[in-house]
Every structure is written in structure tokens, then in C-alpha cells.
Image (tube, rainbow, N blue to C red; front, side):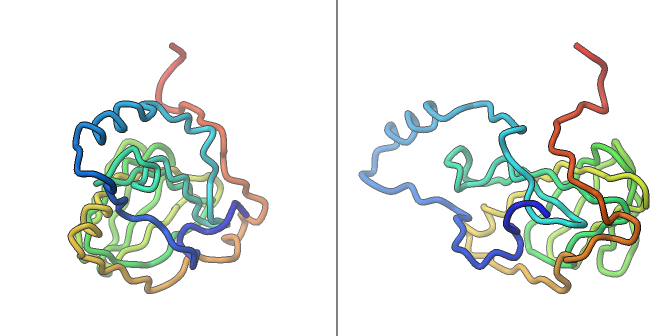
Length: 185
């Protein structure tokens, strides 16, 4: 299994970072200009598993952004995520694989190239429908903005599975950033 679970951790996390110190927007602007504009995805490791893995690229704790969150989800063959709900919306751009969502009891199928939208206040879960191949989705959400506005509701209904999906016992998340959508440049 990957490093410590982002979703099960009891450690304090930064959802919205403070702009602390003297009230000087020029200093904050300079700080932001000094931040890296490119992060190497291969330097960010997956967390969680063994059915759903997450690689968190951009979060407020990184100091780069304040109002949005970007991460990659990888679902093992036959894998699924936790079942949960939250007030913020999320967009899942499906990079590879095929699967489906269950939103408030309704199934929505997806495949590579599709965008799955999770509406706010919807209880949902993500599933990889392929028992032999993994699936990946790039996830963009404005959760930090909702946290900033004190709209804190997020509820887990069912945790991420702690055992591999049947038939995927030996699956290891794909750390490499392979480009399945484009040819060589």
C-alpha cells in the first residue's frame, strides 16, 4: 500500500492557509511570484490504496493556490473509492480506463476522455468497471473555497476499502507519468 492515507489520517491538515503578518498585498504578490509555476508530478507520490490511490498535486498547504485543489485518482482493477458526500462540486477528467459513478443511487458510466461531474451535496462513489486494468482521473475541485466560507460539511458513508479488489491482489499503482493520450513530441 502507498504512504499514509490522505483520507483516513487523523493528523491536522491545512485546508485554507492564512495570509498572516503585516497587511501588505505587495509582499503576498511577491511571495506568489516567487513560488514555482511548474511542479514535477513524478516527485509527488501516491497515497492510500489498495483499491483507490490519490496523488495530490496542488492544495492550499503547498502555498501555491488558495481556492482550488487538484489531484489524480487511480483505481485498481475492479477498485472503488470511499462513499461520501460534500458541499463542493468536483470535476473528474477521465484519463484512461472505464468505470462508473453512483450519485444519490443513480449510476453514470464513463470512459477515457469523459468528464464526470459531482454536484454539491450528492452522496457518491467512484468505481473502476474493468477487472483487469486500472483507471485514472484528474480531479479538480474548489473544496478550499468552501472551507474558507465555513461550509464544512463532508461526510464519509463508507471508507475506502482496506483490502484489494478480487483479482487485483498484486496491483501496484502506476507512479510513472505515462502519456496515453498523445504521441511523442
